[in-house]
Length: 114
Image (cartoon, rainbow, N blue to C red; front, top):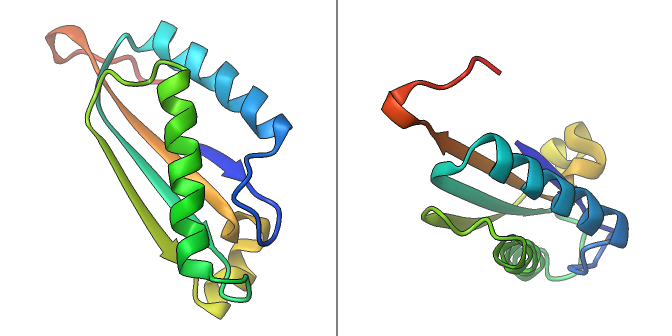
């Protein structure tokens, strides 16, 4: 799983996160050339402006980057979610994030344990 953090009230992917995502994409393509599916989940904190739309915009921004970085070998599910106040408090800065979950496919149904 890859976590992309965002600044409060922003759907712009920070430069550091773009670089980290590019590096992660290279690693995933090299280590797992076959992909079964990818899930992209945009999240927002309830105290952010237009939280629901912001969460969806974050997911869309990261989705565009995954396409640019060549993570397009599998079906992609994108969704968005606004944390409850309690969940936002527990999650801290991860309440303003996008989570990417990539499920690799392996030849002969044989994956390494990593």
